[in-house]
Length: 69
Image 1 (cartoon, rainbow, N blue to C red):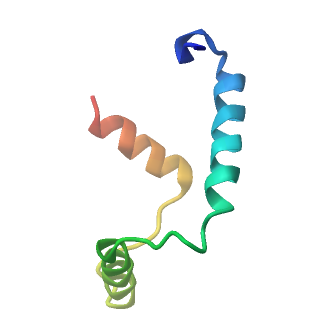
Image 2 (image 1 turned 90 degrees about the vertical axis):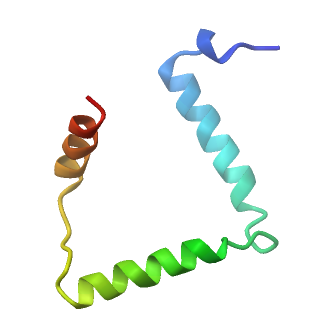
Image 3 (image 1 turned 180 degrees about the vertical axis):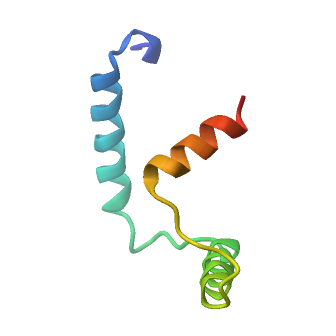
């Protein structure tokens, strides 16, 4: 069996794309969990009530990196 540690970053990304393509073909038989629908509703409500805002992707990545240090 191939060890993921031996793959290059490009090979890993290609593998992820293949896996995602395979999973997305089965999307009709897969339903999101109820908590996911509720989380989306909560986010939409917070946005409508001006309790949250959008940030750029670069800002989001920085926030995530900073929160894990």
